[in-house]
Amino acid sequence: MTNATIHTVTINKADIASGGMKSYKQDDDSIILITRDDDEFQAFDGKCPHAGADLGTGLRCGNRVVCPWHHATFDSRDGTLLEPVATEGLTQYEVTDNGDSLTVNTSAKIDKQIANDKLTDTHTLIVGGGAAGFMTAHQLRNTGYGGKITLISADEKAPYNRPLLSKAFLAGNMPEEKLLLGGADWASKHDINLSLNQTVSEILPNERTIVIKDKNGHSDRQTADFLVVATGAEPNIPPFKGTELDGVYTLRSMDDAKLIKAASHDQRVVIVGTGFIGMEVASALAQAGTTASITVIGQDHRVMGNIVSETVSNALIKLHEEKGIQFVFDASVTEIVEVEKADETSDSNFSQVGGIKLANGEQVDADIVILGTGVAPRTELFEEVNAPDGVQVDDHLQLRDGVYALGDIAKASGQMGRMRIEHWRVALQHGLVTAATILNDPNVNSLAERIPFFWTMQYGKSLRYSGHAATPDNSILFGSPDTLDYIEYYFDDDGEDTRASAASTLGRDKELVAFSELLRRGHAPTRAQLNAGFDMIEQSQELSR
Image (tube, rainbow, N blue to C red; front, side, top):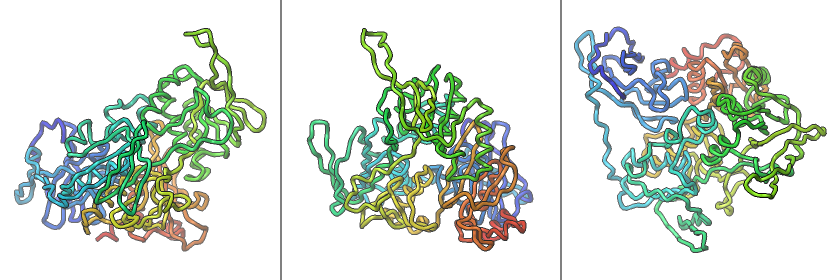
């Protein structure tokens, strides 16, 4: 709890049912969360350490306290982190039993310091400074790993929160320093050797060895007891002409975001792509209010068409249009048009973006173009073991003994089948599971007991999605997307007895949490049950009793 001025709070026991929880907001903006199991009470900082959500407005299912916003999950008995996107467990406070009441002393925190005394003579080598690499290193240290950890990243910056680039940084709502994962001193605080601006040129899985080549061609071989590879993904560059011109951008790194932020001032911006990255960039730039115009071009007639139904898509389009975004749908780009401009600092000219040419012959004028056309996994270092679309690993992310492939490159075996998923929360899950596997911790669930989750933030509204569906077109919709109050369930076919495999929502977060817990347990409702008035929250809690 930060900036707390109230240290002692008295709470009536009768306010909380056994197996339940309740949060108490204080005058100093702090929140205390109390959980109860029979006559056992625990007290925690009630703000989710990820983004500050009131955990008491989430859901408790058995011993799992689930955040309503981004589904970070904590153990109700001791606050242990069970699921990201939080990277820390909950601060726990001492409780005094007064008979009919409890006194919580927020200045008396329960010490959960863990000695780093496990595997002290080993070395873990992590390739990649994204979510999966960061979480592996972070969780290893937080759960007792005492060996050497080296994290190698091609980026020039310490690990940072990439999803917030398109959600908050471009909008001007969050400074760069706030994006650093674990804070500015994360590596030194956790005794992690952070090696930046390093490019790995070769991986030898059988030897748990990597080769690093510098700009002069000199090679350095490093071998470890545990090799974790999380090289991420890189933007897909479409094959049409003009993608190399000045004024054409992709968004994957902090440097990309800074360039877009600076270049978009008073410019006509065209975004190619209507997936969630393209829509987030449009939202963020519109909120920043510094562009001359923003146009989004899509090949389909809807946005996020592989994720949500047409009805939800139309509501999102309406939301964007109300903010001044223009759309061009059913359009194929054939060329980014080149124009000559005078260089004010010399007598020469240079080529720059002038517009987008479409297959129907029309041209959309533009000063800068942002390509939101998807990404491809960086699997080239695993050529000998590649699947066509990812490195095949088990539900502990293990390729072979002591070698792990994580994040965007991993085609991992999990509860919902073998799949490769490019989402931040999934990458963090991978790091959590890998750290536990290295430490041989049987108390941490593998991917076989976890499900995917992601969210997109547009104009301050958060659309959240849990599970995985092959198509959004076999769906049942409840509520009104136009008023940003709905939940939609997705099925792999139109059978009445088919169980939902995913859901998305705006505004019905607790119901989505309940669905996620049922899906995780293998008890997602069927289409027939949903149409008959299935009570998601009641059923999720009943199953956990």
